[in-house]
Amino acid sequence: MNQNNQLTTRPPKASEPKRARKVPEALPTKQYKESPFAKIFRKKPAIQEIVREPTAGGIVFRMNKEQNDIEILLIQDSKNRWTIPKGHIEPGETAKQTAIREIGEEAGLFHIQVLTWLGKIHFKYRRIDKLVLMTTQIYLVHSTDDHETPTKEKWMNGIKWFSFADALDAIEYEDIEKLMLIAKKKIRSGNY
Image (cartoon, rainbow, N blue to C red; front, side, top):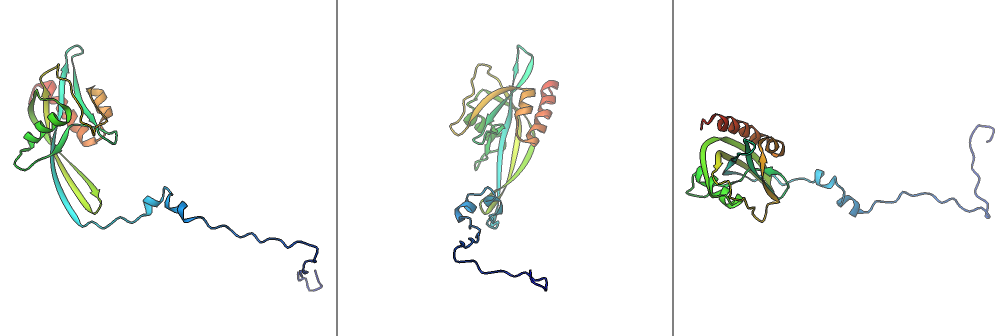
């Protein structure tokens, strides 16, 4: 230091190596594209259309005579979510006809009896630039042939009879769970 309390720097001697200045490295662009946050911050296309999709299905049950308990049939979709058989209402079809057809197609059960309408549930989801508003009519359906084995469609990951308590635990949708509780009361009381 000199007398004025100022720092002075001396030039390096010829024999001293220059100190390398550390320059931060730029991150490759590829890392940003593969980041888990990339999807979160990507702008979605604006909603261009609202689509209404009417669907119908059934809470299918049978009585387990050995345990005197209700069993519920659930299907496991391609995303591993347990739900009930249901599908789109075709032109000229009633909701009840759709429920019967979908149970046959998705579960391979044809010896069934529709007992009563339980209610409807609403879903909404986005399909690229469309907002899909889905309304599903749900029926209480009795499987009348204890020996008829359910069979799954190719797109499903599973199909299974559950005890009522296990079905409540497995079901992914709270609205369907509520209708299952209504169904149980109707089955127990015999009031369809």
